Length: 311
Ligand SMILES: [Fe+2]
Image (cartoon, rainbow, N blue to C red; front, side, top):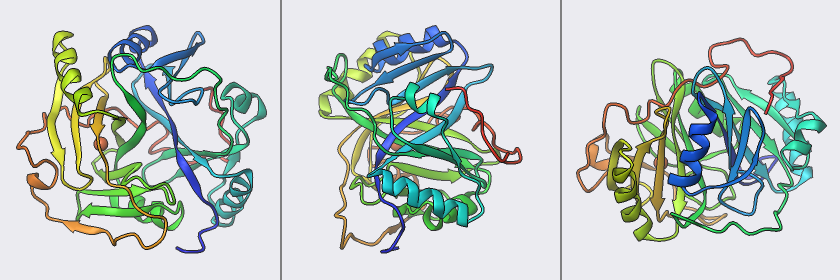
């Protein structure tokens, strides 16, 4: 693990498939509090940082997860990572120049984690936007994490550690593995659990103030938005959370607070007891719709040699 060939900076963006782009833009801008940066006929770019986007909404016949992108530290990391995945026979495909220009970022490539079917994009050089992100309804600090459910939980978990270099921070045996993209300090930027069909579980936004959780509770109630879990507090990461549904039924989360790990000498992962109290100490009960956020695009299909992805 010490000599893993590339280093992550952060989770950069999630590309979501949505069935009514206009409706979803309004939700992520007005209810979640993201900044709409750019709108094309079939794609919208929204941000919660100095990046051009942290959420890309793509008009699609079905909702779900299109891909997830991580920024690496340098272009040298991208080169090393590309060679690494090539050597593993995973057929990484460079993002075409036209697309990297549209994404306002440096070179990158896409590679599929075959057990879940999820397409990862790894790149360097997200463009720092001149105009600061100005929070509106919520003090969002960053896109926090993406969680998926995999039809091959063990295969995905092992591949993400072995091939993608993620580190497990905590896990509940057979239920969930919380992972950080070393040397990014946050307890988890990605997590995976099991399911009969691979799907998106939820997308998280970290907020800077406990009040943002309380305000969100009343804001979503006022708009008749379905809350599916919380408010509560996760023991693994010590985060206070609230989960609710976007207009397609994608579970989104605000969370406040998260354990941070040092680059070297981090504590070892904890095996958490498989009981409800390991996910919430306040006694909240998840709704059956919690985490049922639509398919992972391309899951269950053979991996093509090259990818043509529109957004
Ligand atoms: Fe979460």
